Amino acid sequence: MNDYKNTPKSSATPDSPPSKEHLDELCRDVAAGRKAAKTLKDFVAGSPVSEVEFRLLWHLQKNSTTDQRALALSLGVSPAQVSSCVEQLRSELLVVGVRDSKDRRRQKWRLSMGGVSLLASLTTPGVRVWKEAA
Image (cartoon, one colour):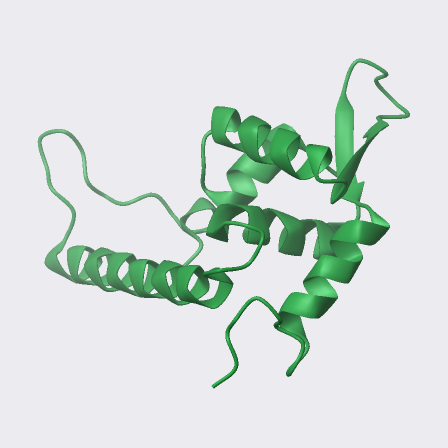
């Protein structure tokens, strides 16, 4: 999938629509994104976390500590949704907050040991205990 933040802006203006090729690309990317979201949603179905919570935990696993604004941008959700997810995960002891060393007013988030364990259980074959055995 393309990262539109790092690609040149479309030549579209309010008076000029994007090219047909660009529209084709956008439509394909939207379809691929929806398919990926459904795949992740199905993967975490029945687990203790939602699809967005899983993506937040996965992001923190890869990025150590991250503030809420960066999480919102990375996850493609609103800051309010990130705030709700972070609070839920914090209450379940899956993430912990740490103060930004450069700006004590800002809080960053990182995985707790519980979050690390949960991700391990979600991604290790044969350990997904919330699914019923076949």
